Length: 120
Image 1 (cartoon, rainbow, N blue to C red):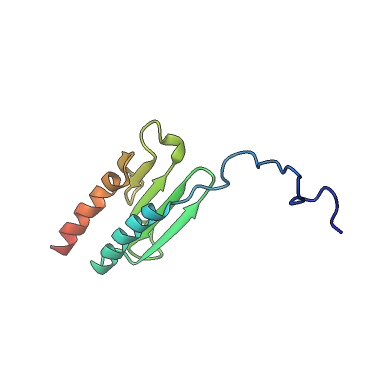
Image 2: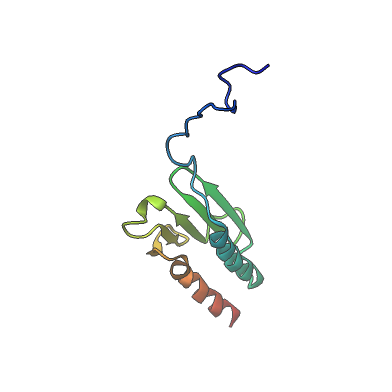
C-alpha cells in the first residue's frame, strides 16, 4: 500500500511548482522559420554547421561557415526584453547587433537579403 502523503493519491492536493521555466526555448513555428533559413543558406554554400544553446534567460541559434570558427550569425531570443526593445536580436560575426525587434521575420531580414545576394 502507498504512503498516505505520496503525490497522486486520490483527494490529495499537490502544490503547483513555483517560478518560471528552467530554460528559454524556441517555439515550433520559430524554430521552423530559423531552420528554413539555415537550410537555404546551406544550399547556397554560406553556412555548414549550427549550434543551439538554451539557458534560463535566453535561447540562442548560431550559424557557422566552418565548425571551428566563431558564428557568422547568432540569433538570440530573450523574453525578458519583450516589453522593451524586442525579444529577438541578430548578431553579426564580430558580435555587433545587426537587428533587434519584436517580430522574428523582421529580425531575420538582413540574413534573407544576404541569401538573395549569395544566390544571384
